[in-house]
Amino acid sequence: MKIAVYPGSFDPVTFGHIDVLERATEIFDKVIITVAKNSSKQPIFTTGERVALLTEAVAGNNKTEIDTFEGLIVDYARRKNAVALVRGLRAMSDFEYEFQMALMNRKLASEIATVFLMPNEKFTYLNSSIVRELARHRTSVADFVPDNVRRALEERFGAPHPDRQ
Image (cartoon, rainbow, N blue to C red; front, side, top):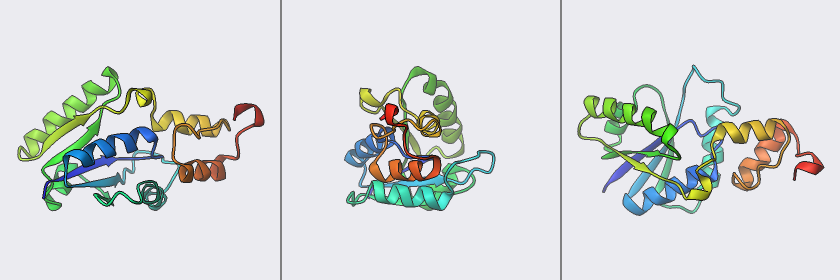
């Protein structure tokens, strides 16, 4: 069984993340989506909330598993017997950072490949930071996130202003 790990903060999960996940499940037998516990970031959702939101968002995809991790992703991937790490690339601005991380991960664990997947072009501008900012300003995020995530954002920040539907 070929297992891949798809790490990220997923704060919150977007349609872009889900698109990359769906592409990954076409390649691998199982994809473990793992939510990073990163003390240097200030997420809007707790780790548990992000796991719950992801679990609901990908329900029905029997080739996925949701988990959390701390530390080096290559150590986690080894424990899970993964053959690859999945990373999404939206634009050239993502490439430099992701390329550096892939090279470092290869140095630390040469047996684990990094697979870069591009989301559908309609999601190339989309990221969690933009979604959080829109939600903070009470602008509809319905086009960018699953319904369960939209509802959670509205509970956190309030419903969109009527003129921002």
